[in-house]
Length: 91
Image (tube, rainbow, N blue to C red):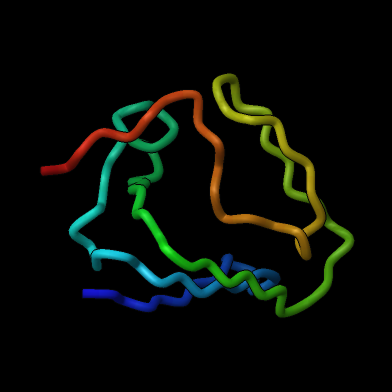
């Protein structure tokens, strides 16, 4: 079963659409402090469509210790963070 979902950041600068390959059957969780504090989960997607709904001169910067350091304009934002670990199965 495939599910299509849409989401956006809090300020609305970025919106994206995702098609989930196996619905929520492929949900994984991670037990690192970054993911635990945010209640993050990983879902494998077959198709991702990013849409910037408004332009901004602001940048997103991540410098957390075990995460990829990134500085990009909102228009080039990607909702995926390259982690230094692999998520584990929730099941």
